[in-house]
Length: 341
Image (cartoon, rainbow, N blue to C red; front, top):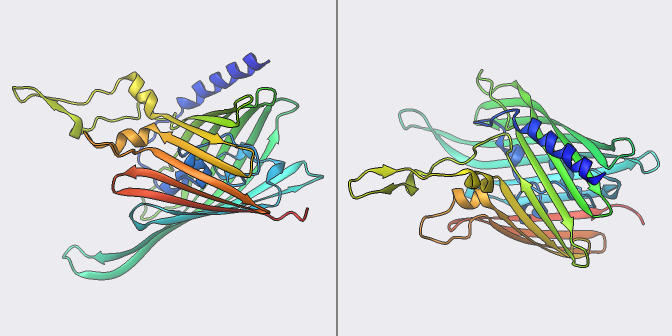
């Protein structure tokens, strides 16, 4: 049965990965890391099926009864003074068998000084975007598979330009309780702009991710492996700063082979004491590390680490993610259990 299910998953990935090649898109904030836990595990964890109500924003198939009456608030101090946050809530109805999820993602780009083509000041302006989502997941028959969907309403305001769009996320989750093994596919941001900024219709940041995780037997560690952006192959581009020259002055561009492409799709993470009140988390994002790496200088780009502490009905989380030697991000999270028990 396990072999049959894993084969089914591999076939599904093959079909989906060929669906579309990613490119420039609007509403890029939709794919930002949505919680300290995800950030600590490298950026895109798909298979956490527990109390973490924020997980439903990224993979709706993980919406489950343990999220019942959980409220999560997250804030990120991002690069360049940008701040963004999320709020999530889930509620279980129908004798605790049906769980509905709602969430909002908001980003504020700050205040900018505006100038016309002649260099004259036009005053200051702001930019912000938000997405409101509603999600639901259900078990497929009596199988080990779960299917979930998020419907999203998106609004964006950049200076005097406004845009409105709709999108949907789909998730498929496989759970093997005997092995404590999870595998999931998330298809994100299938949608369109209803109102464009200035008459030009832009695509949404469509993304396909595949993830696996498992808790080791007799060891309080859960490993995570995520393959991101499967719709975009090859994802790596040659960096002109890494070209080489021979004695004649002929330049050779950086050559990225098949293994280099695979690595750039890969994210790994570890969670220590995943089911306890105190957690330690560590992750590594290979693509971020390669794209932000400085030649002949070690700056630990791609590395992230975080902690989580539960106190009564509240859980506090913090993550520090390394981007470059000059830019890091801090993620703060608070989850509150609103149940009366």
